[in-house]
Length: 116
Image 1: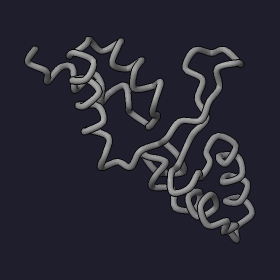
Image 2: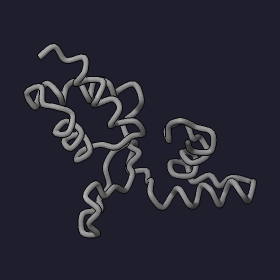
Image 3: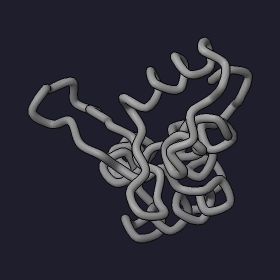
Image 4: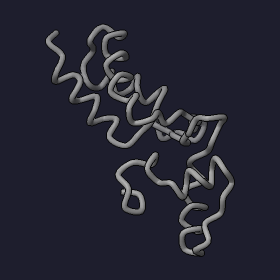
């Protein structure tokens, strides 16, 4: 949980800092936002995070954090595009392109719902 938020896209102080360059007035809040800004960035209108799914320093890369409303469709589309694969392959494919809290949970739920 991020400062009481379940999802990074709900952290308005961080989003204001990244997208609008607004610095929080409170010193503790500023320090928290600075710490998080090391793993998140604004790129155009997109929020990105630094990930390393394979624990290899050479593989660190920036991937988008999609809006909450888009996530279920992203999971469903990926699952269908890959030919209704099992959870591990779906997770791997999603994590190669996206990141968000509970991505693995949503992949597991999609596979469980799949009639194939």
